[in-house]
Amino acid sequence: MLLKPKHFMRIAVRFLALTLLLSGRLSAQTLPPVVTGWILNPGGQTGYGGLVTNVTRVAYSATQVYVQCNSVPSYPIGPWPANPNTPVAMGFTFKIPRTPQANTGTAVATGLGHTGVFSNGVSLFNAQDARSYRNQNIWHQDAYYFERTSFDSCLGHPAPGGEYHHHIAPNCLVNLSDSSRHSPLVGYAFDGFPIYGPFAYANTNGTGGIVRMRSGYAARAITQRTTLPNGTTLPQNQYGPAVSANYPLGAYVEDYAFSATAGTLDKHNGRFCVTPEYPAGTYAYFMTVASNGTPQYPYVLGPTYYGTVPPGNTGPQGGRNPITEPVTEYRPATALPGFKPTLSCAPNPTTGRLALRWNGPARLTGTLTDALGRPAMPSVVVEPSQWLSLDLSPLAQGLYHLSLTDGATVYRYPVVRE
Image (cartoon, rainbow, N blue to C red):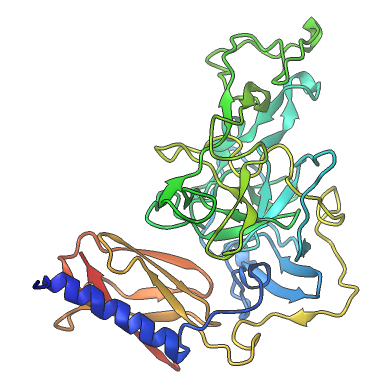
């Protein structure tokens, strides 16, 4: 049987990838993802307002990982309509347990303020804003409804104290529509369990293709806010506002109820499953969006954590953890004996999007050229520890060459556009 040209190209690409793997160019890291999964800024690059961005330091002990950051991303942020607050350098030191534990007792609420930290050092808040109806602490406002007009294009905004944060999935950190692969690891909740984007393996054992994770929460069929999701009937003086155009379903977090059969995720907005970073399985949270990409309650973490939450990160002074034990500094280029930076390039072959991820200490720059050496798109820039999505759908089918350099080494990869 004769093979078509594109089949020859596919075989060549996979053969080259195997060769690189055997030669050590694609060697795997042995430190756990909770140590290696951060977007570091070793050069002190600045962003909004001249503030140092991303994660400034990662150090680890046998039991803890310490993540220092300002809650400022490297991508452009702002403006924030009708929001008078301005981001400031927060100087956080978050402490993430290396061996998180499931909570077998009373679940811990994901309260106001930061509940986790994204891989770029930006804070994650839960679904609520700080207000409730008539200040009764019964009907709590959903930040996506009441505050989204103050979100910037990356879907974040600063709190009164200057802490830039996200209540919903940050679209500048993760591609919320890329269903071609398992979504990347994008952070950790303060119980130590990882957070992923919206797409995962269909089956918890890592098989079945890629599907969108679906929240188990849905808006209740109510027209009056007289009962809570658990069925409790409230006295009249504790009613919420009637459902209306001004206060539609979803305006308050109590408008939602959980059903174990309604989605793929549990009441914490996660599940135990295999992921690319955890091939043996882990509990993981997932960002939830509707099929059209609209944020879907509870957005990232549910109303409660799955695991136990060590003290130090939450509360009014949370995130100011002193490092009082011996630690090892994590530096990607020197963290492991024989460490070799690698570039992930997938899916390859591709029918459109090509996702790149570079784990080296400095940015890569270069070009994508066609088989004749002609530039196929503008210059490519890949920042350390960040995903870059290239849209190859306008290009003709065929073989292309990706050539990137960090100034010392040139990385060349054949890319097939099917």
